[in-house]
Figure: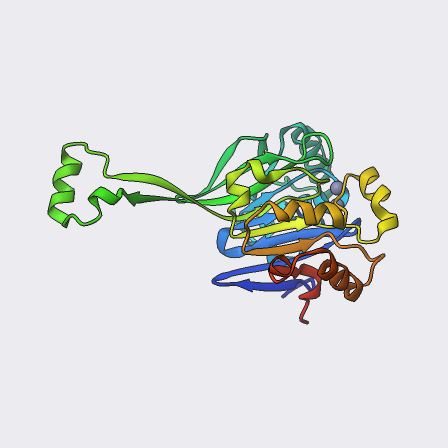
Length: 282
Ligand SMILES: [Zn+2]
Ligand SMILES: [Zn+2]
């Protein structure tokens, strides 16, 4: 039974569900990849997902942790895994311990501290890579990347038996290939991510853009969030096919956000934009 009216987006075979309003709640899940980015509250739809990828500790992104872990336990599921910036592990542990005492039942958890550059395996061929963002101390973003092996072009036309023979001779006939599927920036002010190939080439980019009016540029700077002007610069240098905008504000009505995005972005970029909170269907 859904506890939340979540937005729903389908991109090819991937379903993205979530809710993201600045200062209120942010939770963005991709069930097929078994990941949920941030967990401001813990809607029932995301309880079965095994991996929570936390970008920073602000309440509207992290308050659902204890309920998520506890509810999984209640439903007989394995302890959930929380990836979080390593400087937050100790306060997260304290929160979980406090809830365990309050509730009278131990809340099992698999906590994994991460820092920029780390990789964590989600499934045999799927892993997440961690990169730094500019929002709060230790804040990070995550890319989810599929690893495949591809046969080198010079061996592509060989028959099965010939390939077996070469493998027996320990000839490296394939090379590792990385396919970045989705990148989630979390809260961040502008950073030039064009240095990170896996961010640039991610099929889907999920990015915050909190402020839209010219007079809000200072607020964006103060809160270390993205303003529309910076967002335009950010995506100009990236090649993502689909760009999901999150962390919109209640200050600016959705129709105004759409109009301002259209004015600020070149058409080929605007065509790739999906506003998460515009996609709530129920
Ligand atoms: Zn936030
Ligand atoms: Zn924040």
